[in-house]
Amino acid sequence: EQERAADGRTVRRGTTRRLLDHYLHSACAASEVCYPHREKLQLEPRARGVVTERFADQAEALRWYADESVALPALLTEATEAGLDRHVWQLAWAFSEFMQRRGPWEQVLGVQAVALDAAERLGDRLARARCHNCIARAHVRLGRDLAAIELDVDSDESVAECVEAVLARAGRIDALVNNAGFGVVGPWESANVEDVRRQFDTNVLGVFRLSKAVVPTMR
Image 1 (cartoon, rainbow, N blue to C red):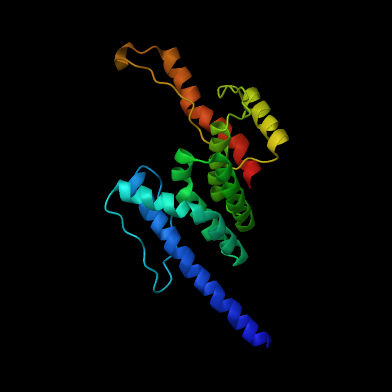
Image 2: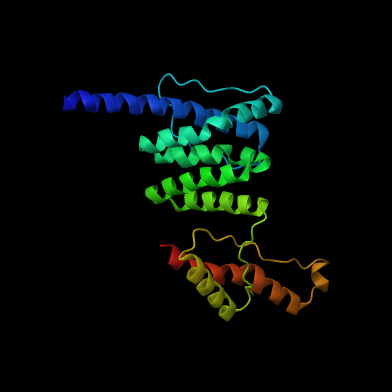
């Protein structure tokens, strides 16, 4: 009896895996058509017999997204119950750009909360960062405030205070994006040495300061 029950669970998990593979690979194909600028996920090979949707143009891909996004919460529940956490967060990500542009934002938050739990179970920091990004964007769409902390990347003291404030508020840091910087425009021979020194301090040493302060907290 126990053996038959185990066989039944294995069959169901395989069926769920094939269903999720169809949706995941189809959603990523739709994403490439609609949002070619997005990073492509590294997907596991499809299970044997799985057929992926193909889209002639953006309009067709968007119609597919609109029709199938209704089923997404149920798909994530199936994936979670089957222990397919990688499918959970990747499927949520594959639908996220479409949902971020269309809403409803509360549904986006619900989907990404499930995806974040899956990423937590996997211990996948990059997946967690992607989920947090989607959650933050949804909160912005809903008009909810996000925390803003003043930071001067040229100052060791400011960097330390900022990191301490973030850790005190959130408990951890999942991702660091170094995008502070400026350019010195004009002929090289007319550049002011002090301006170049300031640029180097911000564009190069600023990255070093923040990375040195943040990366140890992410281990």
